[in-house]
Image (tube, rainbow, N blue to C red; front, side, top):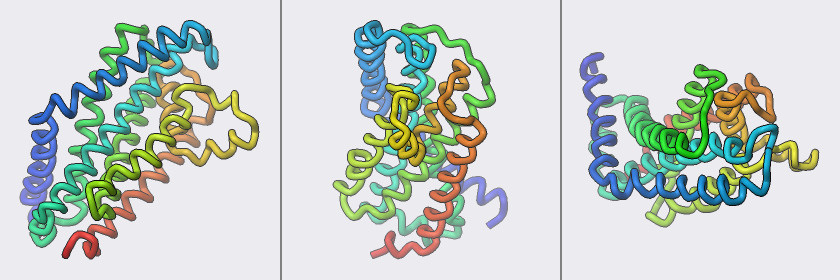
Length: 257
């Protein structure tokens, strides 16, 4: 394929993915926004006023970056896993696989589509959060870099889940039993400084911990972990998922029947 044809293939997948979640915006855009607003009301205003400060910040400011990151993670992941598995279930993914489109373009097309939804929801939630708190961004490059890497990583993870899924039940197992626990244990609602030494070391195995802390640092300059190490770990997780997913697409045995 020529570069122009590759660009057409890539842009077609991305535009289709964006149109897909915009077409059903009452299901894809409104529910996550309502959920995050409830988090702000309950954990920020009601409970946060009783907790006081966390890591030197008012509690509602402490949890705000984590809540924004939660929305980015959830929506980036769910967009790709539902879309790709839907194509797999309807058997039209086979038409894409037998086309001259390179596998890496297929992967990137779905990932960018998932990132579009995740970052879009994240932007909406950020604007809404201004009603509850005042943001003073400490480092714009760090903030943008970590949210882009996070959205990319979980878009790839959603595609990986969709490849292995054999039924619609399978695409809900990972979010329920893996993604949700990792999110709640990823330092969104508490500082890892409150953990014992053992559990603090265990928490370092959670990639979401690095994302939330780096994003919090980007806004307020507060973090429990080294920022350079956090970027390295997030990059390592993302690279591993990217290579694994690309190899599965190239093999395609789980996508054909």
